Image (cartoon, rainbow, N blue to C red; front, side):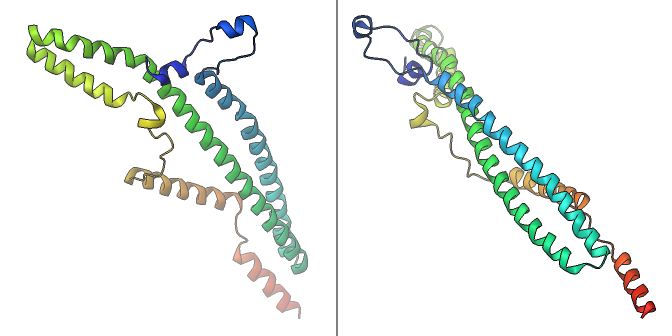
Length: 216
């Protein structure tokens, strides 16, 4: 059994020192630590999400005040509210980035947790196939070649150590599909923002200007 497998699903067993003095403690297995961290990260994600929603509601109210001030011709009030809206949007953007960072960390840990289970479950099959190949080579050479090929393939998929053979943190690679998804998401986001914060109709401004000129 590899060091990773031992660390991943280790069952704590008392040693001589623990039984006598209880002073030496073995490190807990990795899997429960990873799963616990994933659960713990749900709390800050939830808090950041609630804060973002509250700021979003406040943002909508301030924007409505700006629209009302513009309609009433109160330019000073509109500027004051606009400055406040800028600060709110900056804060909400910062909160969104923080939430994204925490969610990304949680996603990576989930990936590690999933692949860790796969490594532990498939590794015995790889060892068995490699042990059978020499015997099969004497009886059915062709079958042994196929088994050896499959064993090598699984051996490439299942690393002996996560830190040495698999880079879970490599998210920098881009692809055409990724760019397409990002463009689609940007289009949807732009549409939602347009629906959420509609611009002031030019007809209303022109009509109000015309009425003011007529009165003068």
